[in-house]
Length: 489
Image (tube, rainbow, N blue to C red):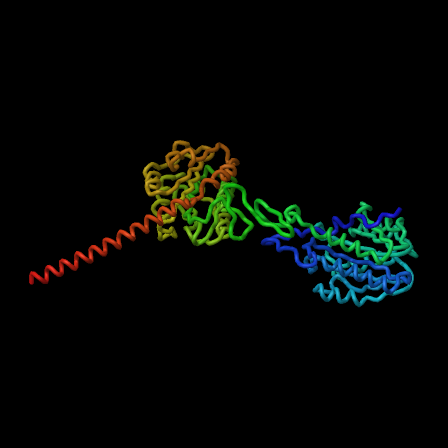
């Protein structure tokens, strides 16, 4: 017994791997789905055995399938071949830019009403319809080439070899048989697995059953599972759409896709980087990656996080001040371009520069904004660090000390803010700097305390109320003094 309407086309079209999508819109009317870039060619039999009314039903089937596609030059392109004893190229892959014009062209197709040269039609599709001159894209892993053959009878030529060549060329073939079509012929035409690529209906009047099957197969509801979302951390699927979320300890940025370990609180952050000769060039590149790893976790902006960079060795060099760069990309590009100084290790001098210059208003620091210093070194300082380290902490700067290799842990502890164990990191191996970066990402952010904010507001309101009361009392006292002076005079 012939199998009627099995599950088909589950792998025909999948969601596009389209970078830069800022969020998926809900499904549009008619079950429209976003699809993987696909060159789709319908090969329809209009031999004399297909009556005019039946041919109209085939065109209705085509139109309903087309309606469900995301049709555009970068998504799905559609062509239609009409065949009988000969093949007529009705619609090329590059013929229509809009779905409306394509559907109008489908309505105008007329049956040829001669023989049934199915093998010739498949050959024509392989050589002509799927050619670049007709709008087909170059074969790649990102683009599918799909042919759907609809026939109602035994072919008058051979299909086995030509269909095999078409499949070998990268064309995925689905065979739909109607009425007198033979299952053996359909199986010779179709791609593997045959259960997914061969279908049969007993008459054209029920071919619309396949339409629904196509539309259901094309519309994949779990967009997250198809990875077509661009969410940095977590994708939450909903019918026809999705939303992005972040792991614990991270917040979602305004773009709705990326996450950062910091909230939107303003922060002035300066990196103080050891560029002494003991670091070595290859490790200096790891240090630059470490800096950019931290930058990735920040919410950079004029009223959010600002980043500055200072390198030191026997002298101190400001790479860029706070606020010079306004975006993560600009900051990261500048970090990548930083050249290696390759001299001594004057950490005390560098700390003094950080305190006196890097966090100065003249260098882009903002009054009242929390200041964070991240100091990286790989060896013992060649000068005195205690006074500068104390001054930084006395001024309220949050200081993180990172040491690798020959760095002296006592010096790191001297630099680090209280509680010291949470503000200094050490590893003997430069390769561990990535893991240190991950730990630091979670600690470095200045988090706003909403309770603190409310308390500050209440305090300000109370102060303003007291000032107004005192002002009124002062005005009354002043008036009495004036009255007394007038009486004395």
